[in-house]
Length: 145
Length: 259
Image 1: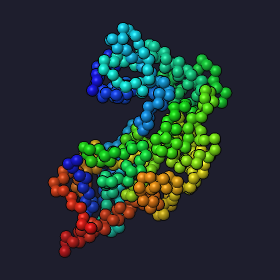
Image 2: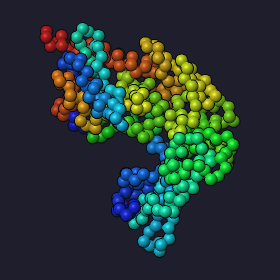
Image 3: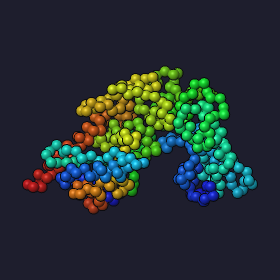
Image 4: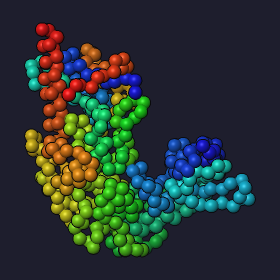
């Protein structure tokens, strides 16, 4: 895991290109998937916040999955959901404290961000580089408590 | 690693890996009804039957279910030999007698040239193909609320004593995993009915939408160490919370920079 997904809300212009890119990147059998990234209002004027899976260190989705369908992908660092294993009990959807595990009614699948297997489409299409997937150079420090 | 021959092609497989996984990886279409990635193989439907032999077996052949047979060195597998097709066709003939109106069975049977069973159709046919995915998924998740009962033609999936199952938490995994949608459930407002039991769904404090059942939430917070308040808000409201938190942080950091 050498790269991290970086979100900079101050650069987001709310164009929602990332949502489109996500839908088309996850199209299956000619059907676009539901977007796994959401551009929401940040509570201030002209501030947009792209919200997507944070790939938590101690992920509630993986803890809640009773059939171990959600595991850490060692290459990308993403929590990957195995659709063959998933029994659609919706436990992860209810457990995620950030609401980033969701149900796609069109494809009838539980979905979550998988970082497109190491090449996120949303970051590629973001015109202002509010979303980036870049190598980690400086280790993020734990905040002092 | 072992190397074996499947339909004339030499492939490599992990030692102890089941044949069906190797066959699927090669892109060969072998029907299997009781196969589910979340649970252990079961060998219930018998449709993934393949022909196996070895050079050293002197022309002797065996017919095994690929989902339960581990890959072995120098094994020669034939997934579509004449005998295998014949075996599969007669199995589907039996399936058609039990589930004549099930689209999944009808399609598989039609692929093998069968439109009507040569046996007598059961008096009250239903869509249950007895694959056991529902009961095994329930066991795997740690509830074991339903199981197979009776034998022979009376075999069916049922909760204990055909009463509302006390161990069920109403997660719907059995109904969702069912390949023929035989397991019925009802979600009306904030109540959910399955297996003759009624559950109350938790509702989101902000959007008023139902999330999961009270029992399931209690199970997850007790055994999986997830705070119970997580279940009181649905995904949409959770995202809004995250957005406003990130918004406040962004606002604050931008102000700090411009100071």
